[in-house]
Image: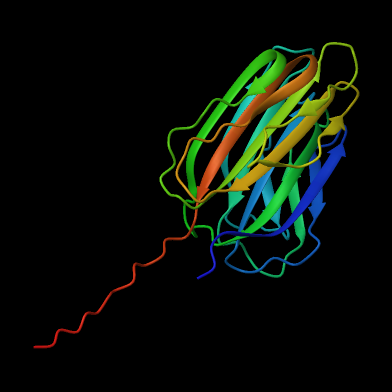
Length: 232
Protein backbone atom coordinates (compact mmCIF):
# COMPACT_ATOMS: atom_id res chain seq x y z
CA UNK A 1 0.00 0.00 0.00
CA UNK A 2 1.51 3.38 -0.96
CA UNK A 3 2.62 5.60 1.90
CA UNK A 4 3.06 9.35 2.02
CA UNK A 5 3.89 10.86 -1.38
CA UNK A 6 4.47 14.48 -2.38
CA UNK A 7 2.21 14.87 -5.43
CA UNK A 8 3.32 18.41 -6.24
CA UNK A 9 4.94 21.51 -4.78
CA UNK A 10 4.60 25.17 -5.72
CA UNK A 11 6.19 28.36 -4.41
CA UNK A 12 4.07 31.49 -4.03
CA UNK A 13 5.61 34.97 -4.10
CA UNK A 14 7.51 36.77 -2.93
CA UNK A 15 5.09 39.65 -3.12
CA UNK A 16 5.12 43.07 -1.50
CA UNK A 17 2.58 45.41 0.01
CA UNK A 18 -0.51 43.26 -0.51
CA UNK A 19 -3.40 41.80 1.46
CA UNK A 20 -3.22 38.52 -0.49
CA UNK A 21 -0.76 36.02 -1.92
CA UNK A 22 -1.95 33.76 -4.74
CA UNK A 23 -0.51 30.43 -5.86
CA UNK A 24 -1.53 28.56 -9.01
CA UNK A 25 -0.75 24.87 -8.72
CA UNK A 26 0.74 23.19 -11.77
CA UNK A 27 -1.85 20.37 -11.64
CA UNK A 28 -5.40 20.17 -10.33
CA UNK A 29 -5.72 18.71 -6.84
CA UNK A 30 -6.91 15.15 -6.26
CA UNK A 31 -9.86 14.87 -3.90
CA UNK A 32 -8.87 13.39 -0.55
CA UNK A 33 -5.23 14.44 -0.65
CA UNK A 34 -3.88 16.94 1.87
CA UNK A 35 -2.46 20.41 1.26
CA UNK A 36 0.22 21.85 3.54
CA UNK A 37 1.19 25.55 3.40
CA UNK A 38 4.14 27.27 5.04
CA UNK A 39 4.19 31.07 4.86
CA UNK A 40 6.29 33.99 6.03
CA UNK A 41 5.51 37.71 6.02
CA UNK A 42 7.21 40.95 7.03
CA UNK A 43 5.98 44.50 7.59
CA UNK A 44 2.38 43.54 8.32
CA UNK A 45 0.23 43.59 11.45
CA UNK A 46 -0.25 39.83 11.61
CA UNK A 47 0.12 36.52 9.82
CA UNK A 48 -2.21 34.62 7.52
CA UNK A 49 -5.86 35.28 8.35
CA UNK A 50 -7.34 32.70 5.98
CA UNK A 51 -6.72 30.46 2.95
CA UNK A 52 -9.07 29.35 0.19
CA UNK A 53 -8.82 26.58 -2.41
CA UNK A 54 -10.60 27.36 -5.65
CA UNK A 55 -12.38 30.22 -3.88
CA UNK A 56 -13.74 27.96 -1.14
CA UNK A 57 -12.84 27.77 2.54
CA UNK A 58 -12.55 23.97 2.11
CA UNK A 59 -11.03 22.33 5.24
CA UNK A 60 -8.23 24.83 5.93
CA UNK A 61 -6.91 25.03 9.48
CA UNK A 62 -4.21 27.16 11.08
CA UNK A 63 -1.86 24.72 12.81
CA UNK A 64 0.79 27.18 14.03
CA UNK A 65 1.46 30.93 13.99
CA UNK A 66 4.45 32.69 15.54
CA UNK A 67 5.35 36.40 15.53
CA UNK A 68 8.50 38.31 16.35
CA UNK A 69 8.02 42.04 17.01
CA UNK A 70 11.63 42.73 17.98
CA UNK A 71 12.98 43.80 14.59
CA UNK A 72 12.65 46.93 12.48
CA UNK A 73 9.22 45.56 11.52
CA UNK A 74 7.37 42.45 12.79
CA UNK A 75 7.78 39.08 11.07
CA UNK A 76 5.15 36.31 11.04
CA UNK A 77 5.52 32.59 10.27
CA UNK A 78 2.52 30.34 9.62
CA UNK A 79 1.82 26.68 8.86
CA UNK A 80 -1.66 25.65 7.65
CA UNK A 81 -3.23 22.40 6.42
CA UNK A 82 -6.20 21.41 4.28
CA UNK A 83 -6.85 17.71 4.97
CA UNK A 84 -8.98 15.75 2.52
CA UNK A 85 -8.99 18.67 0.09
CA UNK A 86 -11.43 19.21 -2.77
CA UNK A 87 -10.44 17.83 -6.15
CA UNK A 88 -9.96 19.60 -9.47
CA UNK A 89 -8.62 22.87 -8.02
CA UNK A 90 -5.47 24.88 -8.77
CA UNK A 91 -6.02 28.26 -7.05
CA UNK A 92 -4.70 28.73 -3.50
CA UNK A 93 -5.16 32.20 -2.00
CA UNK A 94 -3.65 33.39 1.28
CA UNK A 95 -5.14 36.45 2.99
CA UNK A 96 -3.28 38.96 5.17
CA UNK A 97 -4.67 41.72 7.40
CA UNK A 98 -2.93 44.72 5.84
CA UNK A 99 -1.47 45.91 2.55
CA UNK A 100 1.87 46.22 4.34
CA UNK A 101 2.49 42.48 4.21
CA UNK A 102 5.46 41.32 2.12
CA UNK A 103 5.11 37.56 1.87
CA UNK A 104 6.17 34.23 0.38
CA UNK A 105 4.80 30.71 0.81
CA UNK A 106 5.19 27.08 -0.20
CA UNK A 107 2.34 24.68 -0.98
CA UNK A 108 2.63 20.90 -0.97
CA UNK A 109 -0.04 18.44 -2.10
CA UNK A 110 0.53 15.17 -0.25
CA UNK A 111 -1.25 11.86 -0.68
CA UNK A 112 -1.58 9.50 2.26
CA UNK A 113 -2.16 12.15 4.96
CA UNK A 114 -4.76 11.52 7.64
CA UNK A 115 -8.10 12.82 6.41
CA UNK A 116 -9.06 14.43 9.73
CA UNK A 117 -6.91 16.38 12.22
CA UNK A 118 -3.57 15.32 10.68
CA UNK A 119 -1.42 17.77 12.70
CA UNK A 120 0.54 15.86 15.33
CA UNK A 121 3.37 17.78 17.03
CA UNK A 122 4.51 21.39 16.66
CA UNK A 123 7.06 23.87 17.96
CA UNK A 124 7.97 27.52 17.36
CA UNK A 125 10.53 30.03 18.50
CA UNK A 126 11.72 33.60 17.92
CA UNK A 127 15.03 35.32 18.37
CA UNK A 128 17.71 37.66 17.07
CA UNK A 129 21.12 36.60 15.79
CA UNK A 130 22.94 34.61 13.12
CA UNK A 131 21.19 31.30 13.66
CA UNK A 132 17.57 30.18 13.92
CA UNK A 133 15.90 27.23 15.64
CA UNK A 134 12.23 26.30 15.89
CA UNK A 135 13.13 24.17 18.93
CA UNK A 136 12.33 20.48 18.87
CA UNK A 137 8.83 19.08 19.04
CA UNK A 138 7.80 16.29 21.35
CA UNK A 139 8.35 12.80 19.92
CA UNK A 140 5.99 12.16 17.02
CA UNK A 141 3.11 9.72 17.37
CA UNK A 142 3.72 7.79 14.16
CA UNK A 143 6.71 6.55 12.18
CA UNK A 144 5.31 7.77 8.85
CA UNK A 145 4.72 11.52 8.95
CA UNK A 146 5.14 14.63 6.80
CA UNK A 147 7.17 17.35 8.50
CA UNK A 148 7.06 21.02 7.41
CA UNK A 149 9.30 23.82 8.68
CA UNK A 150 9.56 27.54 7.95
CA UNK A 151 11.76 30.55 8.78
CA UNK A 152 11.10 34.26 8.17
CA UNK A 153 13.55 36.99 9.19
CA UNK A 154 14.45 40.62 8.75
CA UNK A 155 17.79 42.42 9.15
CA UNK A 156 18.32 45.83 10.71
CA UNK A 157 19.58 47.83 7.74
CA UNK A 158 22.09 45.70 5.82
CA UNK A 159 20.07 44.15 3.01
CA UNK A 160 18.47 40.73 2.64
CA UNK A 161 19.93 38.01 4.88
CA UNK A 162 21.28 34.83 3.26
CA UNK A 163 19.81 31.67 4.80
CA UNK A 164 21.02 28.10 5.13
CA UNK A 165 18.40 25.56 6.14
CA UNK A 166 18.80 22.33 8.09
CA UNK A 167 20.74 19.43 6.61
CA UNK A 168 19.37 16.19 5.14
CA UNK A 169 16.95 14.48 5.58
CA UNK A 170 15.29 17.90 5.42
CA UNK A 171 14.63 18.99 1.83
CA UNK A 172 14.82 22.78 1.71
CA UNK A 173 13.22 24.91 -0.96
CA UNK A 174 15.35 27.77 -2.26
CA UNK A 175 15.51 30.74 0.09
CA UNK A 176 14.03 33.97 -1.30
CA UNK A 177 14.29 37.66 -0.50
CA UNK A 178 11.20 39.46 0.81
CA UNK A 179 11.19 43.22 0.44
CA UNK A 180 14.57 44.90 0.89
CA UNK A 181 15.49 43.49 4.31
CA UNK A 182 13.74 40.15 4.76
CA UNK A 183 14.25 36.53 3.67
CA UNK A 184 12.29 33.28 3.82
CA UNK A 185 13.02 29.56 3.62
CA UNK A 186 10.93 26.42 4.10
CA UNK A 187 11.50 22.69 3.96
CA UNK A 188 9.92 19.29 4.33
CA UNK A 189 10.67 15.66 4.95
CA UNK A 190 8.78 12.37 5.00
CA UNK A 191 9.78 10.17 7.92
CA UNK A 192 9.86 6.41 8.43
CA UNK A 193 10.47 6.42 12.18
CA UNK A 194 9.32 8.45 15.14
CA UNK A 195 11.45 11.39 16.24
CA UNK A 196 11.56 15.05 17.25
CA UNK A 197 11.20 17.63 14.48
CA UNK A 198 13.43 20.70 14.58
CA UNK A 199 13.79 23.30 11.80
CA UNK A 200 17.05 25.18 12.31
CA UNK A 201 19.87 26.80 10.34
CA UNK A 202 22.07 29.84 9.91
CA UNK A 203 21.77 33.49 8.83
CA UNK A 204 24.69 35.42 7.36
CA UNK A 205 24.00 38.53 9.46
CA UNK A 206 22.23 39.34 12.69
CA UNK A 207 18.47 39.33 12.07
CA UNK A 208 15.19 39.09 13.93
CA UNK A 209 13.46 35.82 13.05
CA UNK A 210 10.50 33.51 13.65
CA UNK A 211 10.70 29.76 13.02
CA UNK A 212 8.05 27.04 13.15
CA UNK A 213 7.67 23.31 12.51
CA UNK A 214 4.61 21.04 12.39
CA UNK A 215 4.42 17.29 11.84
CA UNK A 216 1.48 15.60 10.09
CA UNK A 217 0.24 12.04 10.52
CA UNK A 218 -0.26 9.57 7.71
CA UNK A 219 -3.59 7.82 7.29
CA UNK A 220 -3.94 4.85 9.61
CA UNK A 221 -3.35 1.50 7.95
CA UNK A 222 -5.48 -1.34 9.20
CA UNK A 223 -3.43 -4.24 10.49
CA UNK A 224 -3.48 -7.42 8.50
CA UNK A 225 -4.98 -10.55 9.98
CA UNK A 226 -2.86 -13.69 9.79
CA UNK A 227 -4.79 -16.93 9.42
CA UNK A 228 -2.99 -20.06 10.55
CA UNK A 229 -4.28 -23.48 9.57
CA UNK A 230 -3.73 -26.21 12.10
CA UNK A 231 -3.56 -29.84 11.04
CA UNK A 232 -3.67 -32.83 13.29
